[in-house]
Image 1: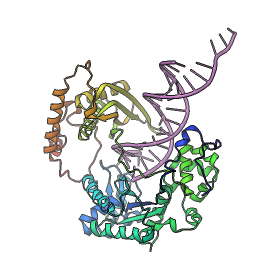
Image 2 (image 1 turned 120 degrees about the horizontal axis):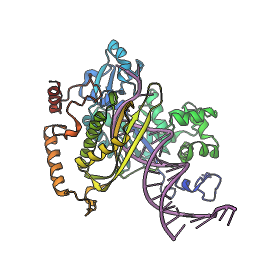
Image 3 (image 1 turned 120 degrees about the vertical axis):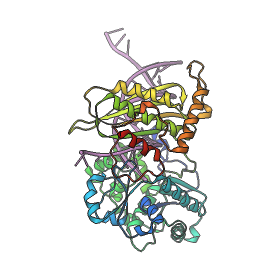
Image 4 (image 1 turned 90 degrees about the vertical axis):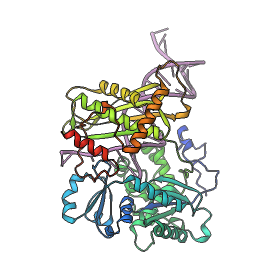
Amino acid sequence: MSFTPLEKNDQTILRPSSLRLCSGSATRSSIFALVDCNNFYVSCERVFNPKLEGRPVVVLSNNDGVVVARSEEAKALGIGMAIPFFEVRNVIQKAGVEVYSSNYTLYADLSRRVTSILTQFTPELEIYSIDEVFLNLSGFERTGLAEYARRIVQTVKKWTGIPTSIGIAPTKVLAKAANRLAKKTKGTGGVIDFTSFSDLSEPLSKIEVGDLWGVGPQSEKKLKERGIETALDLREADDKQILKLLGVVGQRIVFELRGVSCLPLGLVRQVRKSVVVSRSFGHKAEKLTELKEAVAEYASQAAERLRGERLCAGVLTVFAVTRAHGTPPQTHSESAKFPAPTDSTPELIRAAERGIEKIFRPGWPFRKTGVVLTGLVPAGEVQADLFDGANRARTRRLMQALDAVNGELGPGLLRYAATGVKQDWRMKSEHRSRRYTTRWEELLEAAAIF
DNA sequence: TCTGGGGTCCTAGGACCC
DNA sequence: TCTGGGGTCCTAGGACCC
């Protein structure tokens, strides 16, 4: 191949930060296959409730807010992705759409089963999300890549009940595109192999630039203003123009469209870099007490997540979003660094409360708050700070007891008083299915009524 | 009177993804 | 009622150092 984007003397394209543009040029090339579970959450519900087959089904996000998965029948009714539930309530009632709350434990379990089947087809794979896995199919060319992929689809379906689609290509961006096409095109057996095409111009000309992986609404707008409408247009675009317009991220996408791999397979699981707990308020909040209860609640949830993964946080950031009528939302934030990384609920709550006190102004219409933990380190590697004065061993035992009780009897049974009792600021969730696993929380809510 | 150059680290904000 | 929640990476700009 004559195309060599990595030439370090090519000053017209590369700036110092772009030297990382493409990596692994010396390593053996991969053939990427993206395995994507079709309508994953809906498919999971159907595995356990075959009556849902052929019927319109939607799954809602955690706190009831929006639609996060739709069956084909539901899509056909015009129910959009990430659309607020109340907006489609009428359609849902009229058409008799089945509505489910998210059951992440179930989905994660099925995801693990799918992945473990995939490991039998290739040793090199990257778990990209709960419903997507990249495989390296390099070495299976003689079997016939498409044929091999169809066997994967059939096996996963047979052993788990989950339908999948597979796109095959020399780069991740192209594999994503092939996958989209495979999902939309009938008679492919759920598989499209771009490596068998002599020329990709035709399929790429049918893909809108905004549908490409990595091209979001902002980039799409910029590109279309300059006449770049399709994936083909982007592939043929001028390098310097794209670099200026979209930075190295955009440049990478262009290279990948040309078949030059810039995004290698991530074989090792990345360590977590942050923990976020945030929620929108049911109604706008204007009282400091509400905000303090909310951030205390989020800080203690974040602390539990931290301890569950044996991590400590060095920095806590609390943020709040305000939005006056008809104006764009504004985010305000305050960060605090701990003397030593911590996983202690009371310490995190105190930091969150101090942060929100600094942010708070009377009369501001607060819509959402959240707590972000960063500077994460493994709990075992925390350096003791001789001067911070806290009795760490005692706190640790207390946190262990707290987690043990909540683990046994349901999350939220033992809570810090700072998180409030009635929690009126909570989002409304009238359509939530029963919390089978957290009965105590329901009892507490019921008790708070009196 | 006028005021180097280069490097690192950190942070806030933007953009994107599922 | 009027766009969720949890993540990652990149970049620009400021602080600081030699």
